[in-house]
Image (cartoon, rainbow, N blue to C red):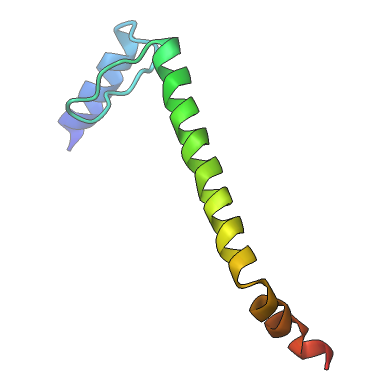
Amino acid sequence: MDEKIDDASSSLSNGEEGLAEGPEGDTPMSFWDHIGELRMRLIRAALGVIFGFILCFAFASDLREFLAVPLH
C-alpha cells in the first residue's frame, strides 16, 4: 500500500505536473479532437431533445389531461 503512495508522489515530483494516468488504451487528444467529440455529444443531445419533443407532441392531449387532474 505504501509503495503505491510512494509511486504516486514520486511521479508527481518528477515534473509530470500532476497528470494522472488514464485508463488503459486511453490516448491523448488534440484540441480539435476534443472539439469534434463535443460536437458529436451536442448533436446527440439535440437529437434527444427533438425526439422527446416529438414524442410529447404526439401525446399532447393525454399529457394535458394528466397534468390538469390536480386542478379539478
